[in-house]
Length: 346
Image 1 (cartoon, rainbow, N blue to C red):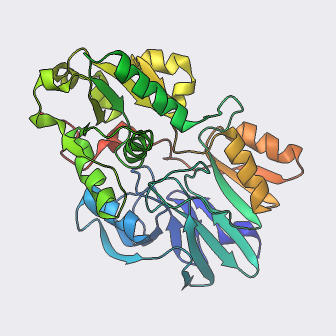
Image 2 (tube, helix red, strand yellow):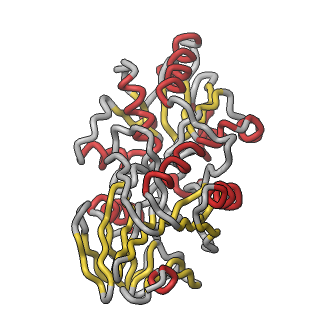
């Protein structure tokens, strides 16, 4: 069976006709397998949803208990037969519960990686290379200019600023699922043990991480704090909040934003970010190319991002490669600030 007979794009996303399911569909379908909990991949309204337990839990936090007709949790490495194919989930290293979906049929294995990173992250299972014939890769940072560097070094920049400006508060914009928790864990690993404060949109998901055994130290809601008491503190907030009137509750705030896009200085200026932190939960150019090579795949499908450059790189190394025309995906957006009703904290 040809790979395109196993997985093919349609108007709902990536469809597996022999298995009767879609992967990360962008509109309601009868059966969906979800790679991770970010809102551009995990949508409500499907008949049945299969995912890791953590991803199902994230969807419940975001959409409520009736986000799908039925749900089924799948552990990493567990094999499940659906129609004419078998599937396995493997860690993607993106956020807690994120998974690559390995779809096998008639001796051909296709791995849909979802979003992934190969960099160390203490808050989720590390990325696992899955040998396959066809590898479906994202290309969010699929240009050679994107090399994220050392996340710990970026955290040292943040802590140096806190020490240099003890009269100011530091606000760090970070997406509420994955990035915020990783930033907190990196700050703790750097030796910072003071309380870290959370915007209301951060609380449920961050507490969920803690309930799953992720050590994040002393975390407190910022809403109960007086302005003067927030000097020399660190607060995590959705990216949209750090350019909002909400920041007026802080003494002379230093605005920071943790994102791979902060490698582009113009983006930092456009957002009014004083302290850009190049910390990404997506693979950079070196991570993408190293992962493609490590899978041993002879064919690569590239989606949501800078497809052309990565397709060219693959072809220059003798691999069959093409862009995969899927819509509706991108880096988790401003709307990914948190569970419904918590994005605007009074």
